Length: 72
Image 1 (tube, rainbow, N blue to C red):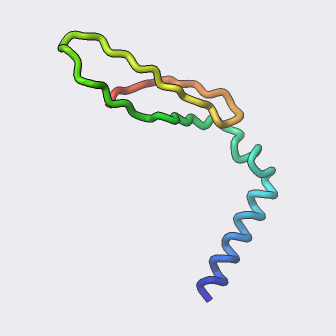
Image 2: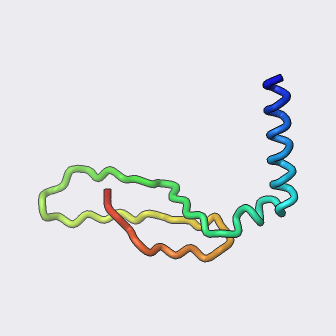
């Protein structure tokens, strides 16, 4: 019985996804993706500037606006 319920839920979700327009409708908003979300620097002398560029990709279809960045 549990397997039958799982199949039913999957079918309902698939039908809803299909009816909504599929992937294009699901991505009708900005989706920020960072292939490398973190970086560990090698040891440096105190006071030395260190720089690392992070790539942020917009996998959605709407404009992505980065309004705030925080260090961790």
